[in-house]
Amino acid sequence: MKSRETILFFDQLSMLVRTGLPLPEGIMELAQTMKHPSSRYALNRLGAEMAGGTSLTEALKHQPAHFSPMQTDLIAVGEQTGMLTEVLHELARHGRQELALLESLRRDLIYPFVTLYLGWLIFSGLLIFVLPDFARMFDEMLAGEPLPPLTNLVIAIMHLARTLLPLVLFSYLALPLLGIWLISGRLQADRAMIKLIRLVPGFHHLLVLNDLARFSGLLGVYLRYRTTLESALRQISRILQTRHLGIRVERWHKQVNAGTTFAQAVSRERSLDPMLALIIRHSPEEELPDALTDLSGVYAQQADVYRQSFSSGLCILLMLFTGLVVGLMVLAMFMPLIKLIDTLVD
Image (cartoon, rainbow, N blue to C red; front, side):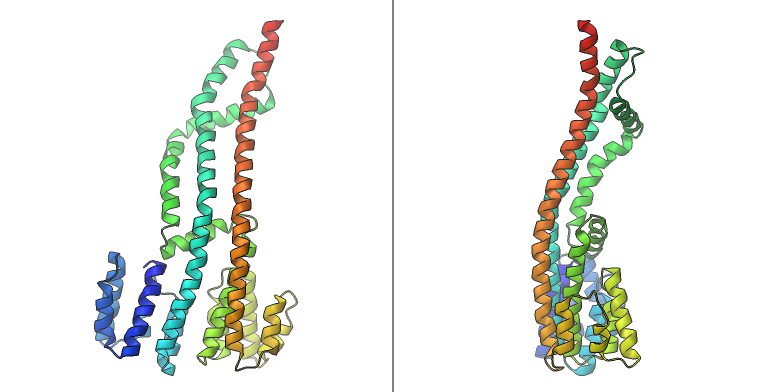
């Protein structure tokens, strides 16, 4: 299921629970409104299992490709506490927040991806279709004369590219298809996109801000519905994207489980964001869920601002890199020509 379909399902399921309609039949009816066959199949199977006596939580666990452990855990809390409607509403709200960030990220990365692809087309096209004519001319008119090191390097890359010509031509089709898949909105595509752009310098800070928003928002949801702090920290640590924050939350879980208060565990962290530490240490227990939810929105806004500057900077860097590579290639082709002209003049 696409992220948007999952959010829509939680919204509709919340209305079914609120109105008291039978969930198995209602879910199978909702399946008919889904656009993708895989989504219809998943919801039909979900409804069929519930009609056979399986609980909603257990049926969702049988669909790990469509529903995350965090979602099934929260729904289990809702079933146990009798607040399933509220939990489903919170899941939809949280999903919309994360979807907005992902959609903004997809939209902002289109231009850098197109810039990189066009740069690759120009670079490989010059290597395969233009440079061989220059190389033959150099061999004929500068026979026995040493070529500049930069020219020799470019010619060596040209021979490699011509050897791998089928792979280069395949990339002309594969890269656009990969880009289309990455912005398709499917759960697997979103995960792959995050893994790829995680390799880009500077993107780590955006992931940290996004994880802080996720941690604050989810912890607020868990605490609002009276989930034990130990269970909440354990579950959240498994879904964070930055390793160091996941390890830190897992450490808090172990300390709280050993009898340390949450405020004391947080106070021991020196590199933790000051705002998060202050809210956890000083917010009254009954106000902490709402304070964490508000803080999640603040982190989400910070992530959005950083994302915009990050994507703009990435575009500029890619344009400069493409211009530098093409410029060096042109320079490598014209350096022997200067030498050739000097020879002819003499």
